[in-house]
Length: 221
Length: 197
Image 1 (tube, each protein chain N blue to C red):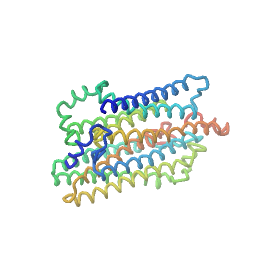
Image 2 (image 1 turned 180 degrees about the horizontal axis):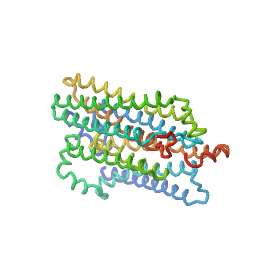
Image 3 (image 1 turned 180 degrees about the vertical axis):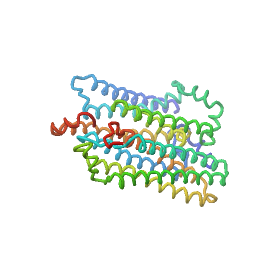
Image 4 (image 1 turned 135 degrees about the vertical axis):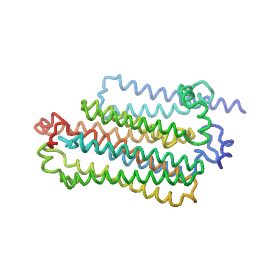
């Protein structure tokens, strides 16, 4: 690699040298973006937990089937898309650009599947249940009297921002796949972003879905 | 000349080590003092002290490791797992496909455990603790293997991971305040909410 000189300059781990982190500036930029973005999601999830604990009542409306089963499938899809992205990066590292492109397209397909499944989930909540960002459906209010109306805003806010990230990632990967012949380490940098989106879901899924299971069948399902 | 520099490094590391021990001592003292009530203030103080101790300890620990006084306890395990591959992967910047598939399998397995626990319904507090623990393990696996951070230079790891952990902990410090807010609610409303929260 081009950083071979840095090796001799940097004696120990804090030695600095020309490339103090032994990665390119763009990859470092992506890491810095990921750090700031994880703080965004961290703040949102802490706010959600705060609002939930501080509320008198918080609706737990998700039935095991179909809601939890549905979101579990979404989780599996997103995890698998991370694996295909790993294969894309390793193919690109070995110089197999055609193979890398195929794996990226597979990742995009899985990402889009995730978005479509999530949209169906949203449609179910908005149209069938009547949930709005700052208002609970009447049926829910009967089941959980005095429940906090913030359920909708935290749910749509957090999952919406995450879905936006997935959608942006699909577009980003599409650009990378289209221009893969002219690019070098961009596949790996896009991979960092994609894995981060997957990582965020690993916190959103348990906090939003698995802790809101309707065990008492309040909604009669 | 070299001796002077070495003495300087030794002195500085000793000072840092002393500060780390001092920070740790303050944290321990706070926990065992009579005024400890596990409120927001106490958690804040303990967390800040532990963070300071970690911060001060990083340099002496790395110095000790560079001098060979400190052996990595995970080194042998990694050798048994990856074997000679570890050396190669460092150059190649990542793990093998087989390793990645194994990580993916562990991630799926942890997710399955989480969903199973949600299915059988366990007490809420236990559930939260298990879910958060599993999520942190999953996040660490994704960062280490999928995002290749394990195979990056130590300086990058030490720049990214402690910063994130510290900042996210600072968010979480405010969290116990929500219990206070919950307890300030009118009594009849709180009574209604007894069974679940």
